[in-house]
Image 1: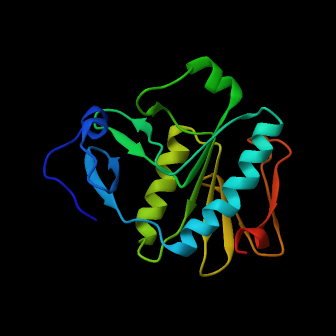
Image 2: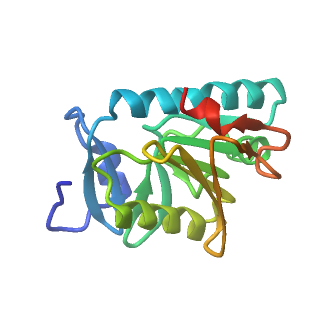
Amino acid sequence: MATVSHLVTADELLQMPDDGFLYELVRGELRRMSPASHRHGRIIINITTPLDQYVRTHNLGAVYAAETGFKLASDPDTVRAPDIAFIRRERVEAVGDVEGYWIGAPDLAVEVISPNDLYTDVEEKIIDFLTAGTGMVLVVNPRKHTVTVYRALADISILTEDDVIDGEEIVPGWTLSVRAVFM
């Protein structure tokens, strides 16, 4: 993970030339992220496709890809890019088309743990999303074939392949078998 020695703003991050890497901004610190592995990409598609189809069919809002930045905090700025994000229709309609980063947290954020991810970095991301107002964070662990559901820092459930992810009030009616995530 590369860092720079001065604080970077969200506007500066948005204006950076494309160098082939994905970056996040954490309290003004620029962090370069590695490209996703084959397995990581498949898992993301296994969640994104049914989620997006359900959201579109029921006109619930919008699903966003990993490159989408969400500005979670200012001064210093934090811009996070979850592997998958969802924002409710009412919020999308209220804001309209956004040229830069979405200001605020997604309603749902999904993170797939990569082999090179540090537990502390994943935990930091979860805390950033929940603190900024994300209603549900799903953390997919490919090694253990589990999905951990965070509704709050004190409201955590671990799902196994015999369980089903439930969108609850965040994505009403959407469910997905944990087993299907890892197919």
